[in-house]
Length: 98
Image (cartoon, rainbow, N blue to C red; front, side):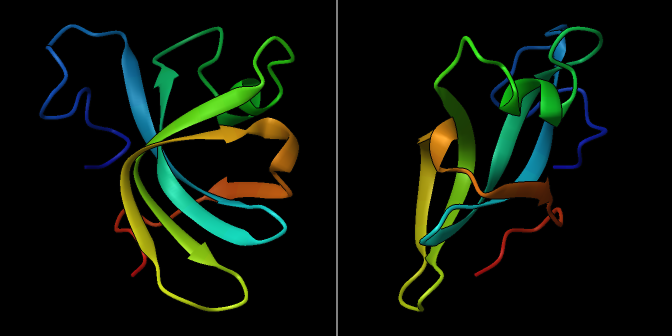
């Protein structure tokens, strides 16, 4: 699914959000997944969600988790990540690694 598509297979038409695939690194893991954002305005950018001080966690779907030290890659439909563990975040390719 591209970030330009208005909704995913499980999302009802008319929902006012979009999805963007991002890559996050913590001290020990590389995490790729889809972040749901508002279509416009408040919280429509990845940085808005990452900097939202009222939230301690961000939620990703369609997630891959790879240990930076090597090892098996885990696949998860859903993951909540504590913002305090994020070292950096960037846009990711449309197809997950692994």
